[in-house]
Length: 219
Image (tube, rainbow, N blue to C red; front, side, top):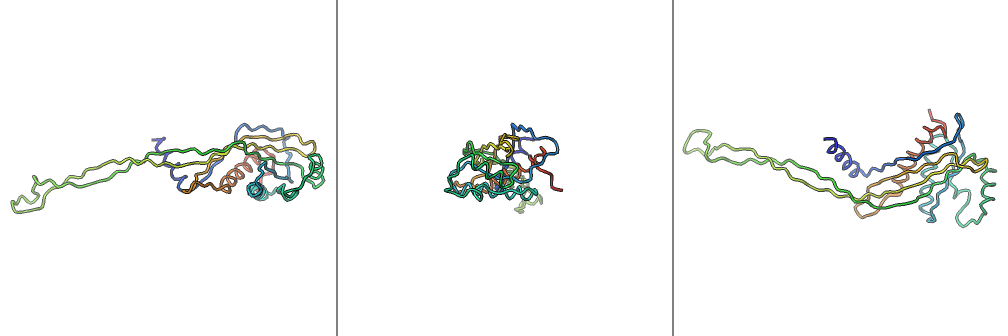
């Protein structure tokens, strides 16, 4: 019964186009009571449109949590060739107390199948039983039968694995690291909404950062 219930939930989530994200392997060395308030967000993607999408969504979620977040492409525009050491100096000079690095390490498409069982009723007449006990009557008894039809629903889900690292700009040492997995149902044409993936990822990320005390909880 539990497996059937979970399958129904999964089908409902797919039909609604829901995305989900889970974080794991979390390590932190953030001291109690220390909250980071200004964070620069950077991802490793070379495609500028995808990079902007990811950084913008994460920045939006952090700002909603009362964190002064800025996308790295706003600080270092595309085509800007700035040495790594100079970037660190700029980030620190601009008042960022932390930098968030997002790395997509793997992506794949997984096909799943869920079997649904439908119950179909049908009435069959029984000519041997005359309800009116009248030889001229055509009113006869009927028996209701049930047929069970199995339908297999297949769907494709895009899976993304990410690594997230937060560093303190004082010494650029990692203070919070985690792996995460995000899943989102693919559209009928085989495409996937990157916005849906990142929205799920960013919401879960902010929840984890608040839970770990890395950023202050918004009340």
